[in-house]
Image (cartoon, rainbow, N blue to C red; front, top):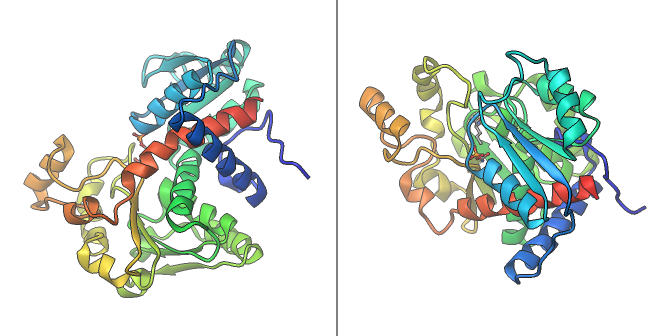
Length: 330
Ligand code: CP
Ligand code: NVA
């Protein structure tokens, strides 16, 4: 049966079947080709979308803005703190107001329950641009990048190193399980994903012929991986006080040349970005001064190496987000 996701929300890949994810990836490839070849695709003229951000962003915001404009749409950006939501107006009321004016709503913020509540009341598709629990649009970009590099997804061995119970760890575990990719979370047990989500992921993985593994051992985790992925050690919204413990817990999970050597010789390095791979950021410099480390989740050497595909992932955010907007509105 043909895939049709018109009118659907995009809140987590848990809600999407492998066929639907495949459809979005194929659509993104078509949009990428059109963009590269200068073929106009203003298929959604006269429609408008709103981007509601309660946390900061470079890639997600710019991807939604460019994708929306390429599709011929009007785009409104509401930055953290500039809407009434939460302070003077409830989530349900905000959703009903925006749903009367816009054809789709993107939300980046805190609890997954907020994006779910927006979706329950908006009456138009709501897209999750990152919550504390999930980052589904990033997943499409990462899957597209993996497929571009290896020509397939099924059967690949994917290792995520770092805070495996944050939005990226959770989302990558589900994305891999859905698409038949063997997933390993390599992290201290304090930062393993929640048992309930692991159980769900294992069930999905079983249906799709792959596995979900958790390990504290770096040798075991990195060995023979096709892709090694990491994320920042402290996520947006977490208090500064957690840096000390997080550095202590995650230091040995830094992706460096030694770790990359344990993976396959053809392995790639992935990161959703932004990344602390040097001290050329305010936070990077502060951490260096306070804790004496100049590189965090990944060394500059690996980040800048030929194995690194981080900017392909960043570009693919736009093509895949365009596919999500188009498929849910058309
Ligand atoms: N990867 C990602 O979501 O980046 P931004 O925080 O810049 O949107
Ligand atoms: N875990 C990170 C992802 C950023 C794209 C955060 O939430 O800050």
